[in-house]
Image (tube, rainbow, N blue to C red):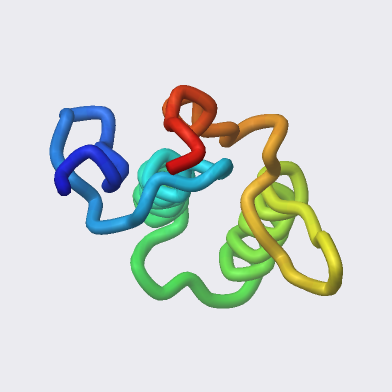
Length: 90
């Protein structure tokens, strides 16, 4: 049954079912981005630094997510799962 779960960039199972969007890849990129923000602005930024943090986070989310039928999800154009198209209909 391993074949039905996504793998991350290290080849480890993520626990997510393979779908048309690669949620594992999205989660990795989002974590990398948040780690970078934390390095730049600290763990709990305040004042101007907090505003910069929020603006950068909002900009990243806007460029990496889309709303379809009222549901926010990773953009298909960026996080399309190539493995999904190789699965049989069964």
